[in-house]
Length: 332
Image (cartoon, rainbow, N blue to C red; front, side):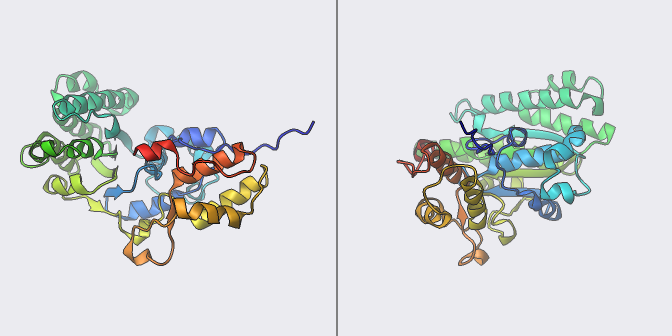
Protein backbone atom coordinates (compact mmCIF):
# COMPACT_ATOMS: atom_id res chain seq x y z
CA UNK A 1 0.00 0.00 0.00
CA UNK A 2 1.40 3.38 -1.00
CA UNK A 3 2.06 5.77 1.84
CA UNK A 4 0.41 9.20 1.45
CA UNK A 5 2.78 11.96 0.41
CA UNK A 6 3.63 14.17 3.36
CA UNK A 7 2.34 17.68 2.84
CA UNK A 8 2.16 20.84 4.84
CA UNK A 9 -0.95 21.35 6.92
CA UNK A 10 -3.39 23.96 5.61
CA UNK A 11 -3.63 26.63 8.34
CA UNK A 12 -7.35 27.21 7.87
CA UNK A 13 -8.74 29.19 10.82
CA UNK A 14 -5.35 29.41 12.53
CA UNK A 15 -4.31 32.79 13.95
CA UNK A 16 -1.31 31.84 16.09
CA UNK A 17 1.94 32.26 14.16
CA UNK A 18 3.83 29.84 16.40
CA UNK A 19 1.25 27.10 15.86
CA UNK A 20 1.45 27.68 12.11
CA UNK A 21 5.22 27.36 12.15
CA UNK A 22 5.59 24.51 14.61
CA UNK A 23 2.78 22.45 13.06
CA UNK A 24 4.53 22.63 9.67
CA UNK A 25 1.72 24.56 8.02
CA UNK A 26 1.81 26.23 4.64
CA UNK A 27 2.71 29.83 5.40
CA UNK A 28 2.55 32.65 2.88
CA UNK A 29 5.56 34.71 3.88
CA UNK A 30 4.58 38.28 4.71
CA UNK A 31 7.63 39.03 6.84
CA UNK A 32 9.13 41.31 4.18
CA UNK A 33 6.66 43.90 5.47
CA UNK A 34 8.43 44.11 8.81
CA UNK A 35 11.14 46.54 7.59
CA UNK A 36 8.44 48.63 5.93
CA UNK A 37 6.48 48.79 9.18
CA UNK A 38 9.61 49.83 11.06
CA UNK A 39 10.26 52.59 8.53
CA UNK A 40 6.66 53.80 8.77
CA UNK A 41 5.37 56.03 11.54
CA UNK A 42 5.55 54.31 14.90
CA UNK A 43 1.83 54.34 15.68
CA UNK A 44 0.39 52.17 12.93
CA UNK A 45 -3.34 51.86 12.24
CA UNK A 46 -4.57 49.23 9.77
CA UNK A 47 -8.08 48.11 8.81
CA UNK A 48 -9.14 45.19 6.64
CA UNK A 49 -12.30 43.08 6.24
CA UNK A 50 -12.92 40.20 8.59
CA UNK A 51 -11.09 36.90 7.97
CA UNK A 52 -8.34 38.69 6.08
CA UNK A 53 -5.27 37.64 8.05
CA UNK A 54 -4.97 40.56 10.46
CA UNK A 55 -4.72 38.47 13.63
CA UNK A 56 -2.08 36.16 12.15
CA UNK A 57 -0.10 39.22 11.09
CA UNK A 58 -0.24 40.64 14.61
CA UNK A 59 0.83 37.26 16.00
CA UNK A 60 3.80 37.16 13.62
CA UNK A 61 4.85 40.66 14.68
CA UNK A 62 4.38 40.05 18.41
CA UNK A 63 6.70 37.07 18.45
CA UNK A 64 9.26 38.77 16.23
CA UNK A 65 9.58 41.72 18.61
CA UNK A 66 9.23 39.88 21.92
CA UNK A 67 12.40 40.30 23.99
CA UNK A 68 11.80 36.91 25.62
CA UNK A 69 11.86 34.93 22.37
CA UNK A 70 15.20 35.81 20.82
CA UNK A 71 16.35 32.20 21.21
CA UNK A 72 13.44 31.03 19.01
CA UNK A 73 14.15 33.45 16.17
CA UNK A 74 15.99 30.98 13.94
CA UNK A 75 13.41 28.24 14.53
CA UNK A 76 10.39 30.40 13.74
CA UNK A 77 11.76 32.86 11.19
CA UNK A 78 14.98 31.34 9.87
CA UNK A 79 13.65 30.23 6.47
CA UNK A 80 11.50 33.33 5.96
CA UNK A 81 12.50 36.66 4.43
CA UNK A 82 13.03 38.30 7.80
CA UNK A 83 15.18 35.41 8.99
CA UNK A 84 17.69 36.34 6.32
CA UNK A 85 17.18 40.10 6.71
CA UNK A 86 16.55 40.79 10.42
CA UNK A 87 15.96 44.36 11.53
CA UNK A 88 17.71 46.21 14.38
CA UNK A 89 14.55 46.15 16.53
CA UNK A 90 14.18 42.37 16.50
CA UNK A 91 13.37 40.89 19.94
CA UNK A 92 13.78 44.22 21.71
CA UNK A 93 10.35 45.01 23.20
CA UNK A 94 8.08 44.09 26.06
CA UNK A 95 4.77 43.20 24.41
CA UNK A 96 1.29 44.20 25.54
CA UNK A 97 -1.34 42.46 23.44
CA UNK A 98 -5.02 43.39 23.71
CA UNK A 99 -7.77 41.70 21.72
CA UNK A 100 -10.96 43.75 21.90
CA UNK A 101 -12.92 40.96 20.18
CA UNK A 102 -13.36 39.41 23.63
CA UNK A 103 -14.81 42.59 25.14
CA UNK A 104 -18.54 42.40 25.79
CA UNK A 105 -20.37 44.55 23.26
CA UNK A 106 -23.27 45.45 25.54
CA UNK A 107 -23.06 49.17 26.20
CA UNK A 108 -24.03 48.83 29.85
CA UNK A 109 -21.25 46.33 30.53
CA UNK A 110 -18.45 47.05 28.07
CA UNK A 111 -16.47 49.13 30.58
CA UNK A 112 -16.35 46.27 33.06
CA UNK A 113 -15.48 43.84 30.27
CA UNK A 114 -12.74 46.12 28.92
CA UNK A 115 -11.32 46.52 32.42
CA UNK A 116 -11.40 42.76 33.00
CA UNK A 117 -9.68 41.94 29.71
CA UNK A 118 -7.00 44.57 30.20
CA UNK A 119 -6.42 43.49 33.79
CA UNK A 120 -5.87 39.91 32.66
CA UNK A 121 -3.38 40.99 30.00
CA UNK A 122 -1.63 43.48 32.28
CA UNK A 123 -1.18 40.79 34.94
CA UNK A 124 0.22 38.46 32.30
CA UNK A 125 2.59 41.24 31.23
CA UNK A 126 3.81 41.67 34.81
CA UNK A 127 4.31 37.92 35.24
CA UNK A 128 6.20 37.12 32.04
CA UNK A 129 8.40 40.23 32.12
CA UNK A 130 9.03 40.22 35.88
CA UNK A 131 12.80 40.14 35.37
CA UNK A 132 12.62 43.40 33.39
CA UNK A 133 10.21 45.28 35.67
CA UNK A 134 10.41 46.99 39.07
CA UNK A 135 9.77 44.69 42.00
CA UNK A 136 6.18 44.71 43.25
CA UNK A 137 4.75 46.23 40.06
CA UNK A 138 1.97 43.66 39.75
CA UNK A 139 0.66 44.15 43.27
CA UNK A 140 0.69 47.94 42.96
CA UNK A 141 -0.87 47.83 39.51
CA UNK A 142 -3.80 45.79 40.83
CA UNK A 143 -4.51 48.50 43.38
CA UNK A 144 -5.32 50.85 40.51
CA UNK A 145 -8.90 51.06 39.31
CA UNK A 146 -9.69 50.04 35.76
CA UNK A 147 -7.81 49.77 32.47
CA UNK A 148 -7.02 53.46 32.16
CA UNK A 149 -5.35 53.82 35.55
CA UNK A 150 -3.56 50.48 35.25
CA UNK A 151 -2.09 51.23 31.82
CA UNK A 152 -1.02 54.66 33.04
CA UNK A 153 0.76 53.04 35.98
CA UNK A 154 2.44 50.32 33.91
CA UNK A 155 4.03 52.50 31.28
CA UNK A 156 5.30 54.94 33.90
CA UNK A 157 6.84 52.15 35.98
CA UNK A 158 8.67 50.81 32.92
CA UNK A 159 10.63 54.07 32.84
CA UNK A 160 12.42 52.96 36.01
CA UNK A 161 13.99 49.98 34.26
CA UNK A 162 14.43 51.69 30.89
CA UNK A 163 12.17 49.27 29.03
CA UNK A 164 10.32 49.75 25.74
CA UNK A 165 6.75 48.59 25.15
CA UNK A 166 5.19 47.55 21.85
CA UNK A 167 1.40 47.77 22.19
CA UNK A 168 -0.76 45.64 19.90
CA UNK A 169 -4.54 46.09 19.79
CA UNK A 170 -6.44 43.63 17.61
CA UNK A 171 -10.02 44.35 16.52
CA UNK A 172 -10.03 47.69 18.32
CA UNK A 173 -13.52 48.42 16.96
CA UNK A 174 -15.19 45.04 17.55
CA UNK A 175 -17.43 46.00 20.42
CA UNK A 176 -18.06 49.55 19.23
CA UNK A 177 -19.29 48.23 15.88
CA UNK A 178 -21.68 45.97 17.77
CA UNK A 179 -22.92 48.95 19.77
CA UNK A 180 -23.36 51.03 16.60
CA UNK A 181 -25.52 48.30 15.08
CA UNK A 182 -28.25 49.40 17.51
CA UNK A 183 -29.58 52.82 16.40
CA UNK A 184 -30.83 53.57 19.90
CA UNK A 185 -27.26 53.37 21.20
CA UNK A 186 -25.82 56.07 18.92
CA UNK A 187 -25.87 58.86 21.49
CA UNK A 188 -24.41 56.61 24.17
CA UNK A 189 -21.69 55.55 21.73
CA UNK A 190 -20.82 59.19 21.12
CA UNK A 191 -20.54 59.80 24.84
CA UNK A 192 -18.00 56.97 25.15
CA UNK A 193 -15.81 58.04 22.23
CA UNK A 194 -15.92 61.82 22.65
CA UNK A 195 -15.04 64.22 25.45
CA UNK A 196 -14.41 62.38 28.69
CA UNK A 197 -15.83 59.03 27.53
CA UNK A 198 -14.12 55.91 28.85
CA UNK A 199 -12.87 54.57 25.53
CA UNK A 200 -11.63 58.04 24.65
CA UNK A 201 -9.79 58.18 27.98
CA UNK A 202 -8.16 54.82 27.27
CA UNK A 203 -6.70 56.06 23.99
CA UNK A 204 -5.72 59.34 25.65
CA UNK A 205 -3.65 57.21 28.02
CA UNK A 206 -2.09 55.27 25.15
CA UNK A 207 -1.14 58.56 23.56
CA UNK A 208 0.39 59.80 26.80
CA UNK A 209 2.39 56.59 27.05
CA UNK A 210 3.97 57.15 23.64
CA UNK A 211 5.85 60.06 25.17
CA UNK A 212 7.34 57.61 27.63
CA UNK A 213 7.81 53.84 27.21
CA UNK A 214 5.13 52.89 24.65
CA UNK A 215 7.47 53.17 21.68
CA UNK A 216 5.31 51.50 19.05
CA UNK A 217 1.64 50.66 18.51
CA UNK A 218 -0.01 48.43 15.93
CA UNK A 219 -3.80 48.66 15.86
CA UNK A 220 -6.14 46.65 13.61
CA UNK A 221 -9.87 46.72 12.96
CA UNK A 222 -12.48 46.51 10.23
CA UNK A 223 -13.74 50.09 10.20
CA UNK A 224 -12.19 53.56 10.57
CA UNK A 225 -15.33 54.93 12.22
CA UNK A 226 -14.30 54.45 15.83
CA UNK A 227 -10.78 55.75 15.26
CA UNK A 228 -12.18 58.80 13.49
CA UNK A 229 -14.29 59.47 16.57
CA UNK A 230 -11.24 59.00 18.79
CA UNK A 231 -9.01 61.19 16.61
CA UNK A 232 -7.97 63.73 19.19
CA UNK A 233 -7.49 60.92 21.68
CA UNK A 234 -5.03 59.20 19.37
CA UNK A 235 -4.12 61.80 16.78
CA UNK A 236 -0.55 60.54 16.59
CA UNK A 237 -1.64 57.35 14.82
CA UNK A 238 -1.21 57.02 11.06
CA UNK A 239 -3.78 55.12 9.02
CA UNK A 240 -1.93 52.92 6.50
CA UNK A 241 -5.04 51.03 5.40
CA UNK A 242 -5.14 52.70 1.98
CA UNK A 243 -1.40 52.91 1.45
CA UNK A 244 -0.13 51.15 -1.71
CA UNK A 245 2.94 50.17 0.29
CA UNK A 246 0.78 47.90 2.48
CA UNK A 247 -1.94 46.97 -0.01
CA UNK A 248 -0.81 43.31 -0.05
CA UNK A 249 0.28 42.90 3.58
CA UNK A 250 -2.74 40.74 4.42
CA UNK A 251 -4.80 38.57 2.11
CA UNK A 252 -3.19 36.74 -0.82
CA UNK A 253 -2.32 38.09 -4.24
CA UNK A 254 -2.86 35.82 -7.23
CA UNK A 255 0.79 34.83 -7.43
CA UNK A 256 0.63 33.61 -3.83
CA UNK A 257 -2.59 31.68 -4.49
CA UNK A 258 -1.11 30.04 -7.59
CA UNK A 259 2.03 29.03 -5.69
CA UNK A 260 -0.13 27.40 -3.01
CA UNK A 261 -2.21 25.49 -5.55
CA UNK A 262 0.90 24.37 -7.43
CA UNK A 263 2.40 23.07 -4.19
CA UNK A 264 -0.65 21.04 -3.17
CA UNK A 265 -1.09 19.73 -6.71
CA UNK A 266 2.21 17.88 -6.23
CA UNK A 267 1.16 16.28 -2.94
CA UNK A 268 -2.60 15.72 -3.33
CA UNK A 269 -5.09 14.46 -5.87
CA UNK A 270 -6.18 17.30 -8.15
CA UNK A 271 -8.71 16.97 -10.98
CA UNK A 272 -8.28 20.55 -12.15
CA UNK A 273 -5.39 22.67 -13.33
CA UNK A 274 -4.26 25.70 -11.38
CA UNK A 275 -5.82 27.94 -14.05
CA UNK A 276 -9.17 26.17 -13.70
CA UNK A 277 -9.12 26.52 -9.93
CA UNK A 278 -8.21 30.20 -10.15
CA UNK A 279 -11.11 30.71 -12.56
CA UNK A 280 -13.47 29.06 -10.07
CA UNK A 281 -12.17 31.00 -7.06
CA UNK A 282 -11.82 34.45 -8.56
CA UNK A 283 -15.52 35.48 -8.61
CA UNK A 284 -15.89 34.48 -4.96
CA UNK A 285 -12.67 35.50 -3.23
CA UNK A 286 -10.79 37.97 -5.43
CA UNK A 287 -11.11 41.63 -6.41
CA UNK A 288 -10.18 43.39 -3.17
CA UNK A 289 -8.09 46.50 -3.70
CA UNK A 290 -7.47 48.94 -0.87
CA UNK A 291 -5.03 51.48 -2.32
CA UNK A 292 -6.32 53.73 -5.07
CA UNK A 293 -2.89 53.76 -6.70
CA UNK A 294 -3.01 49.95 -6.97
CA UNK A 295 -6.38 49.91 -8.72
CA UNK A 296 -6.18 48.14 -12.06
CA UNK A 297 -3.10 46.24 -10.96
CA UNK A 298 -2.88 43.72 -8.15
CA UNK A 299 -6.10 42.57 -6.51
CA UNK A 300 -6.27 40.58 -3.31
CA UNK A 301 -7.98 37.32 -2.39
CA UNK A 302 -9.60 36.81 1.00
CA UNK A 303 -6.98 34.58 2.62
CA UNK A 304 -9.35 32.72 4.93
CA UNK A 305 -11.65 31.84 2.04
CA UNK A 306 -8.76 30.63 -0.10
CA UNK A 307 -7.63 28.32 2.70
CA UNK A 308 -11.22 27.14 3.15
CA UNK A 309 -11.44 26.31 -0.55
CA UNK A 310 -8.10 24.50 -0.76
CA UNK A 311 -8.77 22.53 2.41
CA UNK A 312 -12.19 21.39 1.19
CA UNK A 313 -10.99 20.71 -2.34
CA UNK A 314 -8.33 18.35 -1.01
CA UNK A 315 -10.72 16.68 1.45
CA UNK A 316 -13.18 16.16 -1.42
CA UNK A 317 -10.55 14.20 -3.30
CA UNK A 318 -9.87 16.91 -5.85
CA UNK A 319 -13.43 18.08 -6.46
CA UNK A 320 -14.90 21.55 -5.95
CA UNK A 321 -16.51 22.31 -2.58
CA UNK A 322 -20.30 22.29 -2.67
CA UNK A 323 -20.40 25.57 -0.75
CA UNK A 324 -18.00 28.23 -1.98
CA UNK A 325 -18.55 30.44 1.08
CA UNK A 326 -17.97 29.13 4.57
CA UNK A 327 -20.68 29.51 7.18
CA UNK A 328 -18.59 31.81 9.42
CA UNK A 329 -18.25 34.37 6.64
CA UNK A 330 -21.99 34.26 6.00
CA UNK A 331 -22.64 35.00 9.66
CA UNK A 332 -20.26 37.99 9.53
